[in-house]
Image (tube, rainbow, N blue to C red):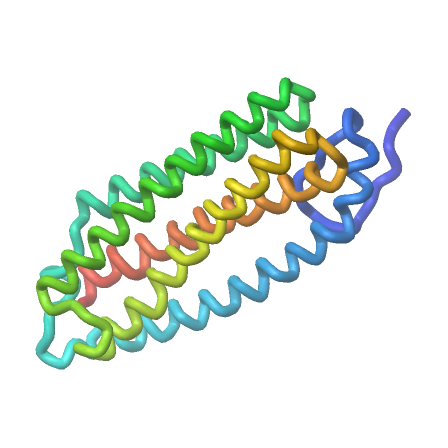
Length: 210
């Protein structure tokens, strides 16, 4: 029998195997979409500030002196791979695979997320050694207002992964936790989209126009 269409949110669908969790998650997931869109507006403002300040280097170091493309490529590869592992966790949930499979993919995602943060912090320290500190110029203030903000979101996502992984092991796949898994997946994919914007506008754009 065909399910009646719902219009509460345009998000991930847990499907017929989890009708209770699927229905219960609609309202809260819609609210989470609203949060993500408001966060997107804030990131959009930070991108706009960066674009307007890209030439405001005040004689200080610029993109060509500060950006390490090898590290940026590695960070991109790590973060995109983590998006794949989150997707695999969602598929494991949707198709009733054993709970340890979901926890395993979350653990892999956590390792990738932490690896990304380590590389990013290393880049920030290397930039500081070259004089690339926030107060040096408007360009660097805009850079540090945007890129570390994304890093803080990744750190929050890693903390969320830890807490949710513990809850899954202790309480099992309850409807509430399934809903949280859906929202975590949305959040993580959102971070990947923001990162694509960062490498395109901040790094490649900076190297092209800075």
